[in-house]
Length: 623
Image 1 (cartoon, rainbow, N blue to C red):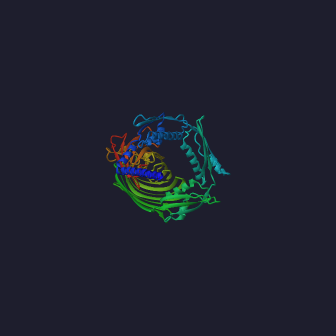
Image 2 (cartoon, helix red, strand yellow):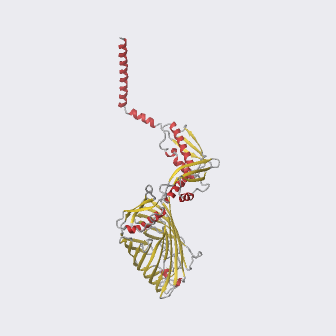
Image 3 (cartoon, rainbow, N blue to C red):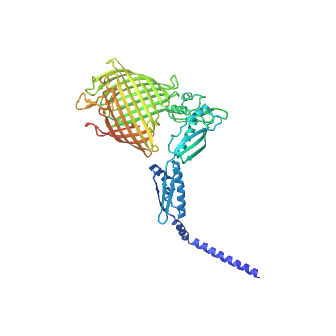
């Protein structure tokens, strides 16, 4: 009986507990505001804080530490408690210490001060970076059992850090990565970094290390396969290869071939893929994947400057006659008082794979403030690739022209018919990354042309010029700095013996902006109206310029520039004579064909009659 009573009492107790539980659950479900209030109570437990990093830190190091500090980057999402804040501080100290070590501060002292009595809480991180450690010897070792002599020599030629450079981890990583790239570039396609061991010597404040490299077998160029050729003949494409099968595989040959293919202007893209040799083989197969572009093109261009007014030009071109890259171009141009046209032809693989035949015919008029010319000329010549990016040209030209000088005291008869034979010689180097919108690299042009006159005055002279342009990209390519310098001279004849259209002039959109075309130099009275002044030209010229280009968004840009230059009567520029300086601002609208530029310039040391503003509109950067 008693056992039965106990069981019944337990059952009643369990039933009561269940009833209370169900009632409690019902109350919670019936009052959802209770859950919200509880959640809000948790949210209100967040512990906001302010943080300050103190210490003798240079600007770049402080910037790095603030970027890696989670106390700084996550300040908008504070921890939910004081304990959480202390945990975040400890984690941040580890991050900051790692950042300091990456910059060579291996003996830095870090401490924290947390004040929880204020709201928001105050966190102060004190940093004593200490002395910056320097790089000692970084040794490279080959792990191959029997490394080839070439691999050993290549190992000894690897870049090593300059003694005393800061022991930055990025520098060490770059040295190791560059070492492997050197081996890959020389045909060791399976080269890779092995074990890396580094030691910090606190006594000498030096970081030393050993980097192991597995070079593997050096590959040779194997069979070449083209993909994507449609209208371009494969035999012609193969003439553009800058290696022979069986040669050791080297990146410089691959880059030279890539440049040769792109220089034809027949391809939108070129990709050269190399595969490791098959097991037991040394020849690496190469696949060249190309995407052809249209071979025929038609273009129309417009330009304007405030001195000479509007102008227009048009052209038609076929770059792949007979499927072998022969190029024919017909162009015409016109302004208010001048017009003309040109026919040019280029045949690659002329006798030799790196030799091209050139021919040009030009007819037209030119009307400037300095002269009026009716001209006909023809030339032919040869062009050869001398090295990657380096081209040489030599030719023979003939020209006859009627030249009328506009200035009264330029020393000529005013109206002359001159006939010349010429032997132009050109050397051009171009490592820039774009024809119309360069952002990095160099361009150098050297041109010298001896002229020999037939009939008339029987005058001979030589005209030479050297132009250097450089480009540097900054801030991830959003900013570009550009510099230009040009010098030229004419030798063998006096200024009055040289036809006015063969002299040097300065001023205008492609020269010294801020001055009218040809007006940055000596002037003389007009032949028919002495109250007007006309450019005379000179036997030498010096020009320079600098631009800072800033890209704004994807389609627009701003440019600030300064140009300077002048022409001189002597065969060498005279520093004692006036040097004309102009400056201004420009806008750019970027299109698939190149930037459309609008430049406004003013003369800095202009004369009374120089216009205060010059406007230039055209396609492409000024240089």
